[in-house]
Image (tube, rainbow, N blue to C red; front, side, top):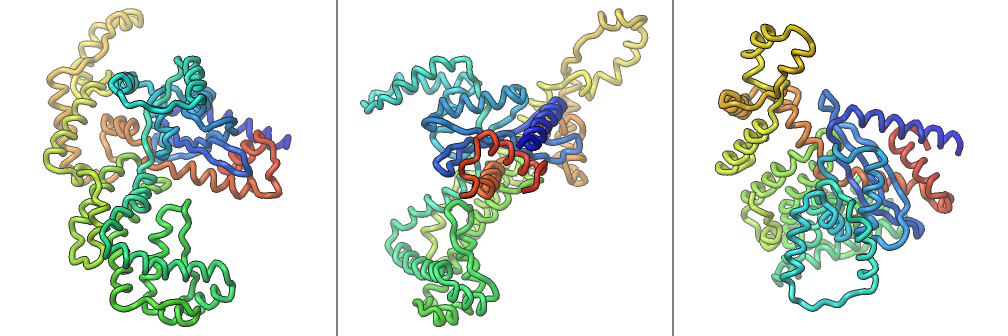
Amino acid sequence: MRDVEILFNSLIEELKMEFKTVEYVCLTADCWTVFHKAYIGVTVHWLDDNLERHSKALACRRMFGRHTYDNIAEILDRIINEFHLQNKITLIVTDNASNFVKAFKIFNENSEITEILSKEDENEEVVRSVEIFDILDNVIVENLDCLTLPPHQRCAAHTLNLIATVDILAAENEGAYKRISRRVFGKCQLLFNKQNQSSQSADQIKAILGRYLLTPNATRWNSFYDSINLLCENIEKMDDVCAKLQVPFFTKPQDVDFINEYCKVMKPIARGLDILQGDKQISIGFLLPTISAINRAYDHIVNLKYCRPLVRALILVPKFKLNWAKPQEKIDIRQRLIDYLIGNIGEEDSVYTASQTSLAIEQHTESESEDDFLSFKVTATSGDNENIQMLVDNYLSNTSIKSPNDLPMQLKKAYFKFNTAIPSSAPVERLFSGGGHLMDKKRGKMADKNFEMTLLLKHNKYLKC
């Protein structure tokens, strides 16, 4: 373990040195339990000067006690301070767990949120039961008044997965859909059970289909859709499979049509999930276009016989460049971008004054001290405003700009700030997946610090296990 500790310390020092050169980072965080031990994992993501995304595991700390919001906030704050990331984080992405959501509502650096919550509490007249643990938690919070957390973003992929697995249950309010869906999915589950419980059945399935069936996994997003979609792709061979395994057949045309319609309806969300979970090229800028594309796909799904209730249950909130937005939204977003660029124009960014004032500066700077005395911060003028508007309009209309590296410098700086963040917390889930392989039954008693060191070294490609 001595070598592991040396490597781990080297990794941490390299990360700290790297963060000194990075202006913006994004974090993902989640909790995980294995062998009756709880951990909180954190990953970090940033863009280099070439706009290439880098991702590293930052921590996997043992959590003691209850997974309360204040406990989570304290651990996250400790990790952020340890790596000196306080003023660099654009977003922390987590799932929709209530303890994470509450932690960021209470300890967010945006005081307006806390004020809104306090006003809601003052206006609330509903009598609620109070647990003694909550009273004790309040004592802890008083000691954490100085703690602030960066802005929070709920994981878009987790939200879409909830829509695809929980919200669609609203479709069962219609009796016809409820009957046929339960009948068809029951037959599918019989096939999955046969494959999982019998190696002979699994071999028979592979002999007919040329591969095994995909079986749903509650912790893997899209798994149910992928499982049903594989059945749909091999529907012509399913009679042979059902006969061989002696399970009920899929009746034609009802069951087969239902499977086809289900895959057709769920495909947009499945594709959206795959996009948002991307590892390298995906940023938070993909989120609204992806949601808009999902909405647009449902606008074009017609002639459904069985799954129309499913579509109604899946309709999302109202809706690259601005092609995904509605006309009025395009105007608003364009103006916000212009306002941001104007408000953040600096001496090195000026698109107007730098060239026009260079001669005057040369004429009036006779020494270094005089240059400092006569140095003024460049402020935006009406000419700057017009040039920035032209810059934005040129970007929106210029078809030759194909990648972020083609952006003008002012827009590239804005890209760094707003697209360093990612829309999904999938990276921290991958960290836990690696932790599951590491913390097996033989290593279940591994010390917490040794587990964190080994996992981070392995995940960050410092150690091969």
